[in-house]
Length: 439
Image (cartoon, rainbow, N blue to C red):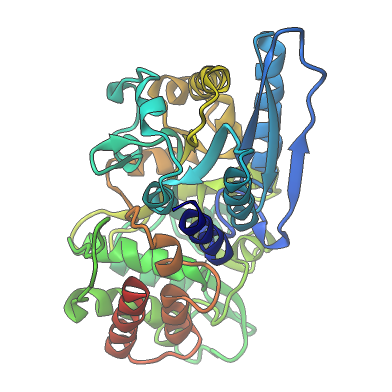
């Protein structure tokens, strides 16, 4: 039995792929890592380890929070290590199998299912924290549950929203951010300018010589995140925690894909193959982009005027993709470390107002209310009522992987780079997902 468990965990570690590359943690493609090295523990203090996957500006904020906790009391000392999510999860499983498990592990809600399925997370330890559901954002709390049990404490919520350059809007005579399909297309056309100064709605516009685009977005796994949000705008979400096979409705999925394709290929307002919309936005070569709240902290000191708006309502109802980070406790027979971990998790949740300085939305309602309001955060707060999470399926990290080959990356490439038929993309996505589910 022990041998089988060792093989299962080793295989899981080898296959571990995070879908959150480029989200809620800055540039994770560099697989950066950092550790918070704390001062020597006071006599009698219990030392615990904390693993996270942050590698950008939010790493600095989390390191500062850990240091603040360590200075605030003498009973618990936290040693914090963070590296890119994929490597961190591999390290976590290897350390767990070796008997040197971390005491606290951060992850995203959709990643939780695989660890629950492996039996490495302690739901009883989380239950014993005595937390109240009413103290947290409802969607984030529900995202930490699996089969009716709470497996983590929600730390924050992340979503897509619309960033727009107010200076470019003013220059074009546009007075407000678009909120509907028609407004988005018309606004993007007016803000897409060729080398001769004509915009995409004017006769003689040269689509082969564009100097400023009206609209941009990441054309990787985030393309699927948009498709997922748009599907939910149609009232359609086929993904569940326990699915064994999936059948996608082309009348719901294909229109979402087609809308994004049309922005690039029909209306010519989005650059094909765009890799870094946030850099294009900062450079003033793209007037509007879709991106996450993790970008807010990096925009606070730019020289042009900007703001955010809610993700436009393209279809019948409001919906947007989102995710939540949580703090989980691996199974650990050391009662002192479990108690110390519980103390730290409670403190971090209650003091996560400072976490908002990195652009995150604290899941703890009291911390959210007390957090400093970064410029641009209001649009994200407005989306909390209709944010849609991906499921915590045990194979979610493979289905929704950010690394090739994966079902959602293939779909994104076929849509935005190859401009394939939307129905064909939907059917290929269904086939690819079912292969993962059956594997």
